[in-house]
Image (cartoon, helix red, strand yellow):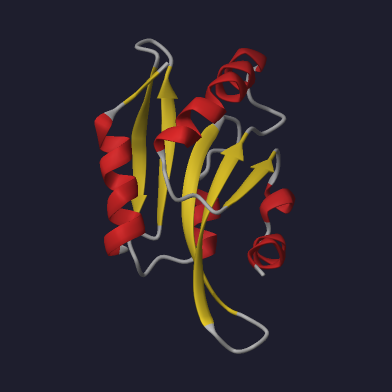
Length: 132
């Protein structure tokens, strides 16, 4: 499985310049390559991000989560989400699962990882709890 250079480039822009709120990545199975599927603009919300994930297909995603700590400090953490809904094809789940660690190594700066099979496993409350 190869990783398209655009994936790394867009991730660096999210991390360093904060050009994007989130990035959704897709494995193009025919060419065995991870590509950028969607870029979320800085003003988009967590709900916009969650609704961008398909109901019955696997994806990888990164989300730049801004939050306030219990000490009232503004912080940001970059989440990696491995999205594998129960309704997706078994072969697709296997391809995404076996490629995940290699893909994550390409994205230097991920702080929290979430694995989700349905929207309840990546609710905003869970994201907040993992960020703190």
